[in-house]
Length: 220
Image 1 (tube, rainbow, N blue to C red):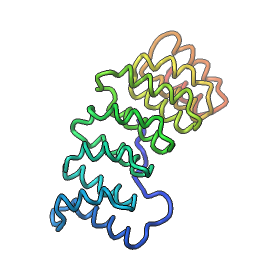
Image 2: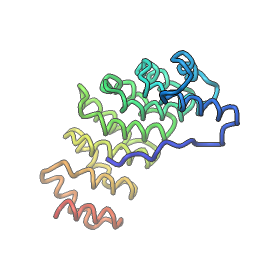
Image 3: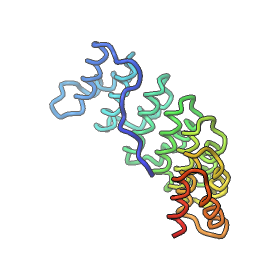
């Protein structure tokens, strides 16, 4: 599954004071930091969202009760912090325990967060205790989300999971916008059967060149 772009700050640059606190939160990950655990955790409540994002990554790296702080950050008012929290779930050794909390953010108001959730679930969702539940929730995004990039991310997630319950959704979205059709065609790779072959043959005549090429590659 395609990885997300490296995390970058979105929006206006932070003030000098906020930037300095963010720098402290980042440097705290290193051995020579003068900050103790209480001070590092304190950055998680900073007024600056970029400071909270940086502190969250530090808490995870240093394993300062990381799981608890990630769960708290999933409910942060700032979408950048929520997005960062979702990304960092992958870094947890027991990340399967947090999939249910992450799935809730498939309904997030931020498309950036929804896309990130789909990426994370595609990476770790296969080992979840109830993959069918995951597939069902992701399928709703693929079928109904207003943003085509979120639908595309959900489709990629279904392809990565490769669960049979996701096949019906993938077949339905083959007539969506070009980016979604293209991704859905590629997502059929783990599946076999006459309905899959028929769908791929139909995509050989798709208006989108890359969709046609994807179908051709899978049929060859």
